Length: 83
Image 1 (tube, rainbow, N blue to C red):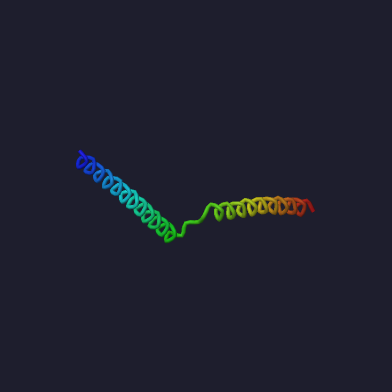
Image 2 (image 1 turned 120 degrees about the horizontal axis):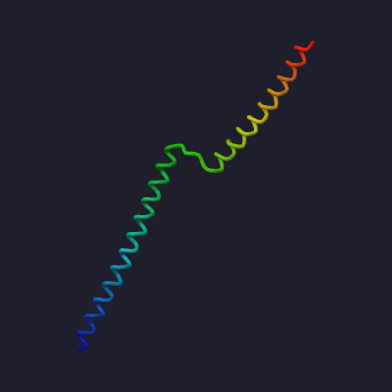
């Protein structure tokens, strides 16, 4: 009976070790894929969300300033034509 218990203990330890190895392999695979994706994205020159938002705000400000300047020029043209 003790031989049988030892057999099951050995099987249990082996299965536990196999699960640990499988978990380690999974973690390594995840890290490898994440590293590959990060390198792929970096090679594509994608911008970060912060960079995108900063340029977007600059574009909005430039459009607003252009609209204000156009309105001033139109007002000056109207005044000049009235002379």
